[in-house]
Amino acid sequence: MGSRMGLIGCFVIVVSVLLRGATAATVYEVGDSLGWTVPPNTTYYSTWASTKTFFLGDKLSFNWTMGTHTVAEVSKADYDSCTKVSSYIGSPVIFTPPSTGSYYFICTVSDHCQLGQKLAFTVSAPNSNTVGSPPTESPTSAASSLSVGALFAVLLSAPVIYFLA
Ligand SMILES: [Cu+2]
Image (tube, rainbow, N blue to C red; front, side, top):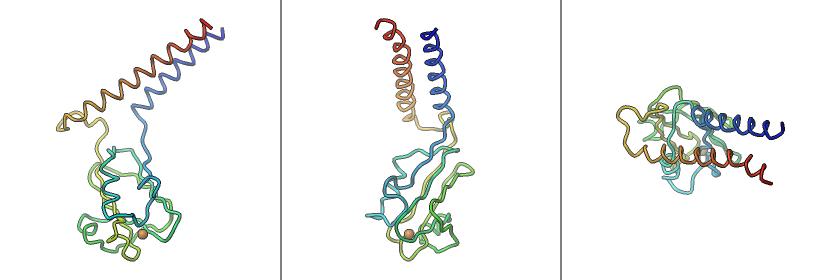
């Protein structure tokens, strides 16, 4: 009875892992551990964004604990010229992109934007590996199905080990 429950439990875990992989939205901490602040260099946030792929449904969390900052969504022109516009002032500011496309954010406090506290990123449609996507996405999906397969094998082998012991 106990081993049967174990098998069912493993099955439930595998199914929920598979479902999560298909539908989970990611919450990105802007700047990771640095948060949203005046960065050590002016390319900090563009470098940060370049390491991520943002999909519709993901969220970006602008967090800061030190100093005074704002979060302002601006046009590309205002992003480039650090134009001061109306903005959100409380931390954290959680932004959920409403559609695919490019987004631009700056801090409007003092000269923070000029010092590099600005973020530009592009949001893609989920499952965008249909039309017009670069073939470089294939290794990523192959890798993730590999890891799911490995997890599957580990979970399925667990009850067997239990029986032998
Ligand atoms: Cu600032």
